[in-house]
Amino acid sequence: MQKLNLTGKAKHSKGTEDTMRGLSTVFVDGERVFIDNGAIHGKSELERGVTFVRTLEEVPNPRPVWGFWVTLHRFEGGVQGYYGVMPFLIQLDEDHQKGYKSLAQQVNCMEKAVKGQADLREVPDDVRARLAEFLASVRPELWEHAGPAFREAFGAGGQA
View 1 (spheres, rainbow, N blue to C red):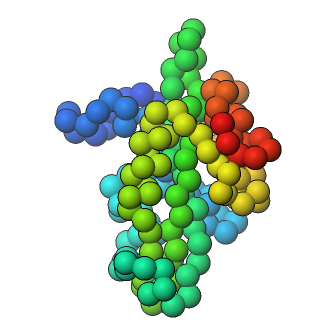
View 2 (view 1 turned 180 degrees about the horizontal axis):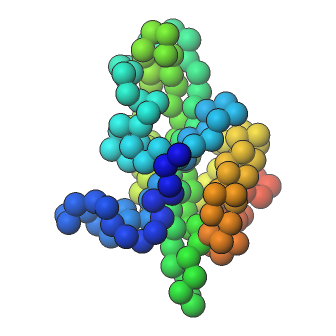
């Protein structure tokens, strides 16, 4: 399993903004929840070998997979905690090696997460619960010190 890329140490090239240091991608694919930081560059495990088409109608048997941009922040007092979380949806048909995603949505949501926004209103409750359980268990100290907007996003309504 990949680690959450939330250490504050950049692994990106020198030209990459510092804000990308605390960015990771978590996927919820049915019952499976996993980190795949390849999504930051459009090269996640799920995206490899898939031809992405312009419309969802071009995907014969789409299966929804939820992705989440998750960011970390160092808060007052020096403690680190989860900061932003924004969802994006990928529709996949592995049998036909086709998929649909909105690149514009992914980029916009990534930017919002980096800025500390948290909005999970469009995410089904069961997916939100699996994500919360995963994040709380993978780095409990980050969950404990999460920002208020992040915490509120996992409550009723899903928006902070």
